Image (cartoon, rainbow, N blue to C red):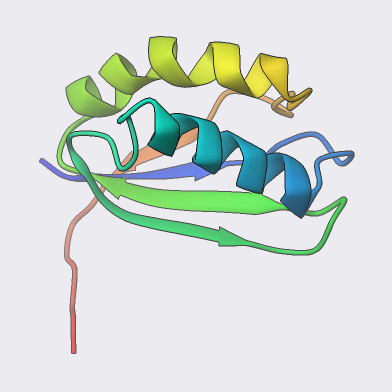
Length: 93
């Protein structure tokens, strides 16, 4: 079952840090990761957020060990654990 993941970094995260993270993951061949259906990054510096839709919780959790060291490298701390909820319905136009 697909899941929605909402990630909230601490308020000091910038778009530049986000861009560096995506660039590093891409250079390692890890972006986009297996199982990621949609990724949306939004907000201004200091109020940056990420929402994602994943094929499964298992694929999301498998990506964590690859992502977390890169977030730490670029000084990105999360405000808490990601919010994970099962998706009931997805509508695309």
